[in-house]
Amino acid sequence: MKKKIYFDNASTTKIDKKVIKEMFTYIKKKYGNYSSNNYFGLRVKDIVNNIRIKISKILNCNKNEIIFTSGATEANNLAIKGYAFSNEKKKNFITFNIEHKSVLNVYKKIENFGHRIFYLEANKKGIYSTKKIKEYIYKYKIDMISILWVNNEIGVIQNIKKIGDICNKRNVIFHVDGTQALGKIKVDLLKYKIDLFSASAHKIYGPQGVGFLYKRENIKIVSEIQGGGQEMNLRSGTLAIHQIIGLGKAIELANRDLIKNNKRIKRISKYLVKELLGIEDTRINGSLKYRVPHNINISFGSIEGESLMLKMRNICLSSGSACNSSSLEPSYVLKNINVPTYMIHNSIRITLGKYNSIKEAKYFIKKIKKAVKELRNISPLWEIYKNSLKK
Ligand code: PMP
Image (cartoon, rainbow, N blue to C red; front, top):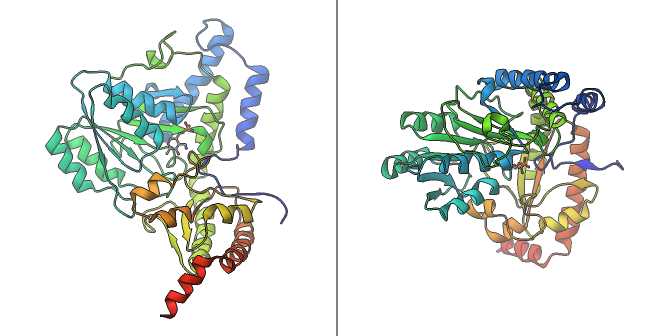
């Protein structure tokens, strides 16, 4: 197999041809400014309106509750700062220590403005304690909580239903970063009692640079970007119609093919997990039970993840989070779920998508088994490990 294998779908996904086609049709033939009241503008307004309706039907919300943004980072910023600065009395927030940086760093920032943030700890499987959430809500008059539905590094799924019920009962605003959940889990905003929901197109075979924030209609937030007042006065700037068209099509396809895609990915994932755990001295990081099959974060004793990746150059993987991988800092997510530092350096993240095949998985297993063997053959640490087993 000569071609490159892409196992880095949590970083970004290959854009679907059907998405490209719709975006190009617009760019070539149907340009216009959403805010103009001429023929071209009204035509564009109609297109965007239909996309809002489509998304709202899929997610079970109202069409005016969708605010288009440049991606999930912006949506998380708008949700958190927008709410925190909407009312002087809204001061107390909960989040967790393995959230995405686009949530954690926003909270770090608003701490400087007198807000009090409780960074709760995930357990060693990466799961959040609903008991602890309840406890803090009672004790500290919490105003809002931000939770990642599916973790981008370890694929662990949180109990959104239970947390949604807890927040709803206590009038706590429930913000969910659904970037890695959309397209993998059926999202029903009403059922899960979600107040704010962030997502991005490029994780679901759509274009980069576009996403949205869902905001329940009765919740007041303030805008981050001032200007012409687009997006219900919450996100000024000329709407990027071709991007929004791409997002709309990607959500439509993700919803249509959810079961089919999951079935395919589950089969590949099951095979990979069985084969990888069959290799001596390996461990999966994060819960094996509460995870999406798309993500396998695994550590190999006595081998650096980076060395493994170098040995398999035609297979695109990630060691730690993609956002961190330009530095060799150990992943804070793995650190915060108590993975020992050496095992963090020994980890790789395999993330699967709808274009992967079992044939690729079989090739990968053959390659990785060979690479592990070769690297361990020259590893003094492996020798020490093997000797320790003899004692
Ligand atoms: N949240 C999560 C969980 C993510 O995985 C990402 C992307 N790595 C983001 C937020 C940021 O998304 P975007 O790239 O659209 O800004």
